[in-house]
Length: 464
Image (tube, rainbow, N blue to C red; front, side, top):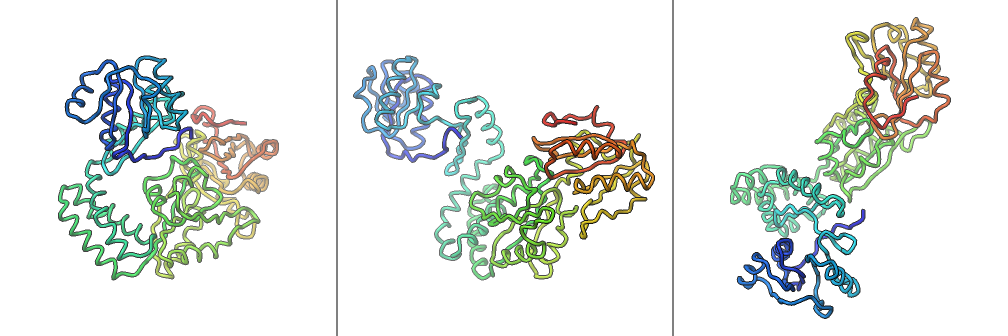
């Protein structure tokens, strides 16, 4: 990022604004709201600035800007129509290591003004780094509609109880869990309804109840979808941002991991063919042990945890040990990759059923019900089948499937690295041999594959 986002404390700090027109008045208003002591230098004083001067909220020096005017200021803003003055202000401020902003001139700035959502003491800021300020303001407007002004009152209430909560709940991780319950439960709802007194009483009661209760963790079994970060569900995103620990596998992209809490511990337990970072039984016990420590654990798995994700095995262990958990479904690879490849899994003219199978069994064989899979008028989706692709095609042909039955292999579906290779049972192995295929992959077999050429819509794919 070109600009590091920080919030600067300006209470009682001297700040200088050069210029006194409408734009300067808006900047002065922001500084005053932050508690700054503002001095204005300008030859011509606009109406809005004159009103502030009359109210004795600012100091005005009606003169041309000179080099010696920049003294011990914490921050300087230049908002004039004179390019030479703006350049001079920026030059002197840079030389003296004073934060400076020249309106609409990012190249002269050491800081820029973001679009601000003010729910004091909650403040949110959005910036495009000067590239698209109008877009930043539009995004601010969207966020404004999502954040009620009552969030400011909720923050004030939380500040009032901050010390008592620290005295009662000693562990930082448990305090965070407590506050998450407060901010997402009945206390917050009472504040939003305008009943702050009742909210305060409820918060006090919950704090008393909490000190008598044992610390208990929880596991969130989260489906991360087929790859694209924006295919996560709202619940998956919310729980990932609550978790103390994120346990993830190799199918979870860095973009998805970036959505977790910044301070969350991240533990990789990925499994590749013949190379398991951690055996499944050890993963099951790891989740249970972390929860027993009072931690909220996000177990993030590619696709859907209950479709070839071994999620059932993990929650069996949790149930046996009395650990609370939630399961958050994800978009399974069959649905996500097929959609992004423009291949409907069912279609009135092609397939009236769809079968999901895995091409990688416990003993590394590909021993499936070939008679059933070779039946016509269906779509067959094979997970983890790229290594056994040649065996799969030969077995289907041997059990009655036509050699020219269409088949697609999709690499890293829904992501910018998506690649779709189209062939037939007789030709696909040779086509794939000439490609540098990277996991994960998905295989789709059936006449629905012929619709790819007309229905493919995802622009970041390359087809072979």
